[in-house]
Length: 157
Image (cartoon, rainbow, N blue to C red; front, side):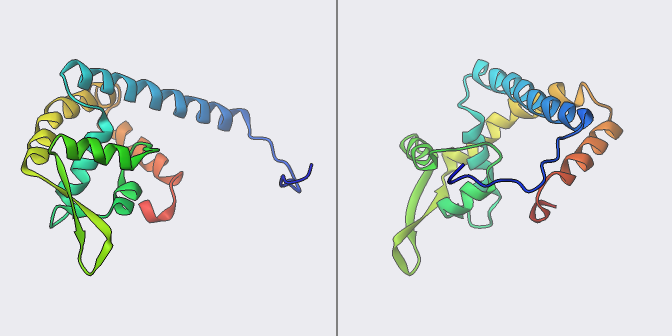
């Protein structure tokens, strides 16, 4: 097959590994779906909005480059530029020139963005508690977090 890498030695995953993979993906979809539904039911925008606003709020100056935002967000965002446009249109962020390089921009959270993030947490936090904390003991949650950390690149540790 031209253009495709050919594996030297194909190792099939065990049934346990395959089951873990399937359950990980299904659990992620289910939990995120329930939390998104709670947010929507409360009249809030999607979790991606919260994710960007929280990242900016946690920065000492409330600013980050679009690339830094893209690297930091929890949820897939295939078109970050469009999301930033919507956040800016709603007055939640503003774009400002990058110091010393007019070709680049920084994104800065506004007071309105900070306020929305706080209001969203009032629904998001309890939704996490119900969807994860309501199903796992504290010890199980710690164990799951530790196991999932093993699947992540070392820079996330």
